[in-house]
Length: 191
Image (cartoon, rainbow, N blue to C red; front, side, top):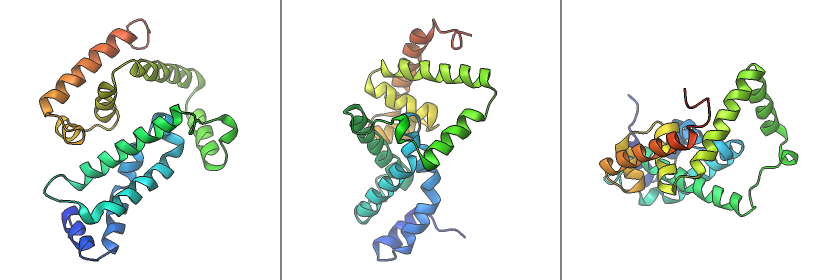
């Protein structure tokens, strides 16, 4: 039988460093999936940063306050926010000249994976959605990303953001209404 997260955390906190490797393997894919959009090409580095922060603080983690996955997601959210802030200040801008190796190969795979007209429409729609999201208040963006992209439930989002489930539901609805209004002129979204 596989050990639970809480059992692994207890083992780690009692000196069993191997337990962190198990947690890392269990959640690496999840954490990596948190980094989409402008973070996509840096997802491996950002995932590594999240696990480094978790490793540094796991000895203080209280299993009675939150689940490990929720705690790790919160670390990922803050890491992403920090990355995006740095990017806005010009410290993390992705230029075409900086794309090389795996990042460039990934870009080629993504762009060659669909027929040109469909990928162009999807890319344009994604671009319009990203643009519209930038017009929403920060809390609306966070809730939309966690619910829409990460497929988290309202309770999990509430735990991460420190808000009630009902407040998260309200913010989600407000975000959807604002996006609908902002995107109503764009034909892909008005169908």
